[in-house]
Image (cartoon, rainbow, N blue to C red; front, side):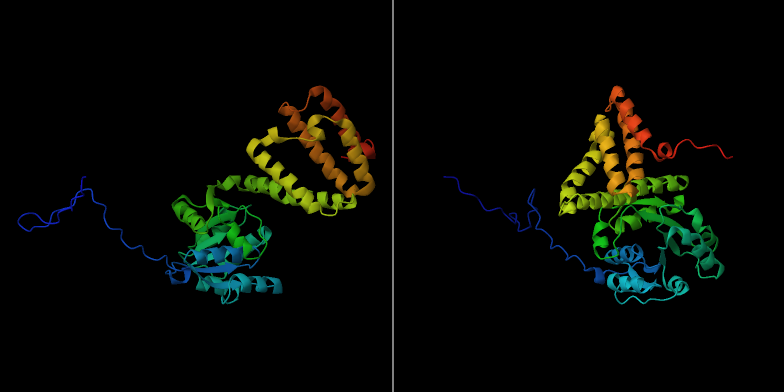
Length: 339
């Protein structure tokens, strides 16, 4: 029987023998520091405690930055700031800029240009200060007044719907951000997005309005469609419209993201003109406010289904005839040209 020989640790002269191919003893792993123990690299301020700003500041806190000030006007925004950014003082916008190295401008799109001009004109902007807005519509040109005052402009738009609650911080994990910045600040902008748990997606300055329109078309209008669908199901006697729609809409969304127009199903894609006509008649009777949206979406769906070979041309003629006959313009009769 072969016995295992002990590995010598010294040679004949008593010198240590180097071990070859022997696994090194594992070094003890340092404990992961808690967020509050990490050195804060930037002080963070929020101007506009809507649904977005406090959530982004809270995520930056998790990454080691330190929120120091927030501005809020309404009682609701103050409560939101207190929930997501406890112990962070609520101050005036100019004071936020005085305290913070990184300032999040999270106000409605239409208010952003005036806010930036006002902060720049009053001398609130400090040279070297990172000024970040979260508008999907604008790139960094809207920050030009602050940039002339020495600020470093960034546009970081999270492609996410926000609730104004702590769940938003969790949803930022893996969320895409539309990033626009001067080339010299591109890496800094992308790094901030990554620290918030997001995925940076570069959007050219001139493409921002189209980018934002695409997101609004997909997300905002989806909410309207789902809400209308639930209301109609309730009128039809369905006790739990949300439970009925959940699996259906989840599957439709997954199929659409995977396959695009190839995922189209239903009476419009099949060319069932009679079914579509029945739909329109029922909607006129029970929910006339939904008719225009149904017709618009049905015509768009028919066009896409026809273009991708899903709707047979011989069926499309009857279907489009139904949709044209039921259009508001057809119902109102021919209109004169009053130009």
